[in-house]
Image 1 (cartoon, rainbow, N blue to C red):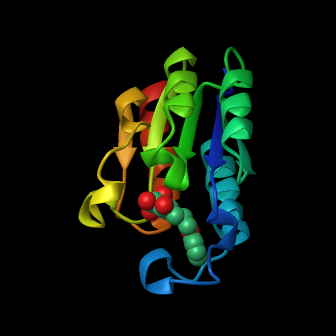
Image 2 (cartoon, rainbow, N blue to C red):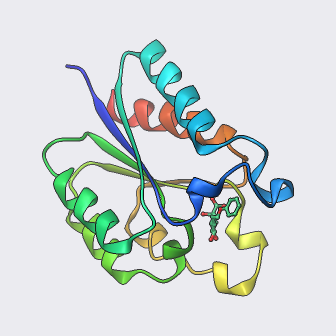
Length: 145
Ligand code: CA2
């Protein structure tokens, strides 16, 4: 059966490639998503990529994925460290859940050390730069294929 993965990016990740390249690199989100789509095609998995700056939209998308997507890869951006609503939505999602970060928040400011996403996820990839995106697809496929 063909598998479906939903790749969700949260607030400010639409700015990738425009600022703080020492942390986030030089690729734009469009570059990263295009690489992920090519990688997914190679693996024969359906990938849908979305980005929003709005917490409630992320909650809606996670809810809508129930019974439709086999896995969610989520870089919730700063909502990672604040959003019990996203935590609760992930808890209600029955597929595989991978938390993803470009940087390693645990090595940064103390306010990034708590992750409400981690507490509701099955796996974590962090600190691998934007390469972490395709690594996350591979890691998820190992679990759901
Ligand atoms: O490392 C990550 O992927 C983060 O999720 C990125 C978030 C940050 O709040 C998390 O603690 C860790 C921030 C995303 C902002 O991305 C930008 C990229 C380029 C320029 C400005 C912001």
